[in-house]
Image (tube, rainbow, N blue to C red; front, side, top):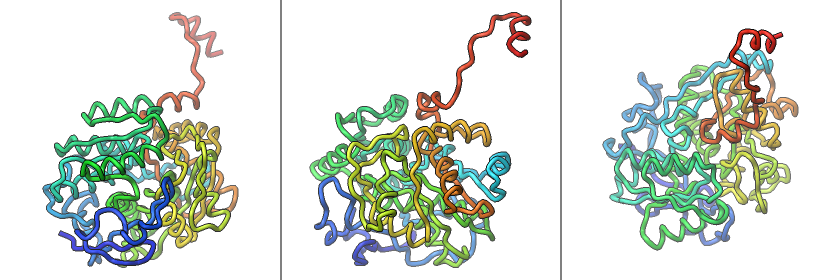
Length: 411
């Protein structure tokens, strides 16, 4: 069992594990309704391994050395993590990037990287004796919680915008979660979930609020580094909505650097849709927090957030890594779905394909050099939003069932 404490990412104050549950009480006093979360907590492990493990980084026995895990029997019985780092030779040649890798997190149990956070949150909820976990989500975090909660036999209550893709609603319902479609935005669903957790005593999985969401997502960075050792990426391209995935990636590399297992921390390249680009605007303007993007919209529903909840920490981590952020048009995201699928065999939803669209922009702007070691984090399966993927292809017309018709079509 790893011993740890919490550190406020804003004021630096430390807290024992059971002293707080979600955020720093002092900094939370500055919270504005609907604004980015104040007092986000990060986990500080008292010790870290100084050598790479002999087995998979997803082995619970190994994870117990890198994560704030209690009894291992609380870990959900799902094969979370250990997703492949693909060398993507055809895409390398296509882009002229000879050291490009794809971290294919579409292969997680529920089809997205959000399983990583939910696995740890469910494990901690069971350790703490909680019987209900709630979350607000545009889709994937809710699905991930539904899946891990189902595997562990714990109740999940999900607050999701009623306009979420139908296939995502079906998936979370199939896992048996209690789904509450909200007639409003993700940001409104987030606030209602917070109120409900306070009122009913539910354990809150909300991104950025629950410190274990960042900690769980760092496992993707651990796996990337373990696969590439003794080398390390120069740049990691990450899709950004609330900013917690990129915070997790940053935390994972920071822990590995502290342990002496990697030589440097990669630059973090954040990618957002142009219609929901609060982080990009804040970086461009030199701000420490974001301005709310009213009526945020994009085909990449997983990235549509008016005010990213983890904005303050996300901005600091991107800057600390000497990274940057780019905004991409929906048309570029749609094109990237087909480009990624045809060049790698990886079928991504819009939010996940956005990393490839973002890499195009980063290369054009000189933010990434084509010769560098680059990793694209592909966060979610295209099966989660087939209607969006359909916009990236041309449907063939029917062919009469005769060889003559086939020959005529082929000529």
